[in-house]
Amino acid sequence: MADAAIFTRSQIIWLLCLKRVSGSLSMVGSSLIVRAVLSDRKNKLSKPYHRILLCMSFVDIIGSAALMAGTSAMPKGSPGTYDISIGNMNTCVAQGFFLQLFLAVPLYNLFLSYYYVLTIKYSWSERKIKKKFEPIVHVVALGFPIVTAISGVFLGIFNPIRLGCWIAPNP
Image (tube, rainbow, N blue to C red; front, top):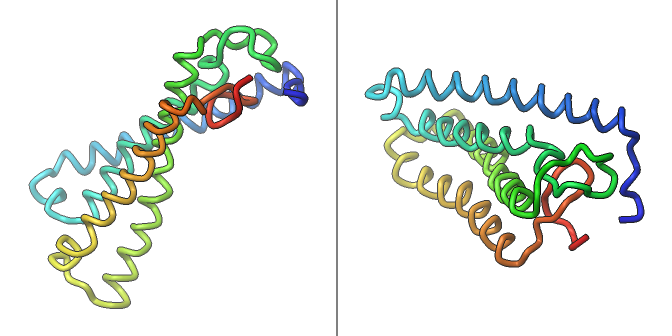
């Protein structure tokens, strides 16, 4: 990597702190959503909106944890990390896998927007959404990230990048 030392050590530390703070806040928020939905299972899990929100929150908790790992998951001595990295290639691949799964969050968010369009503009009932829309939501929102994450592991494309591990050429 020609630009491996693009950040100074203090910049990397600040960026990692920002990732950990934002990741922590995201995990707390998503955990509160999970708790709110599961605390009234009978009522809330009967609604497609809450099931979509619950799945999005579960994935966000996992992805935020992977994001918070930052350079810790990178192989020890990775270029440009100033010896902050403490992981190995297995931890790097695991982080890449979970960050790829994290793509389900914006997909779920997109589908929540469609949910509102269908209910508000087109007056779809919850029954119609449950039958025609919700299965597509989960297949696409979870299917694409899971398939690409598993493929990434087998193709060996999860490698160290500036502040963590994700899709990158072999170092």
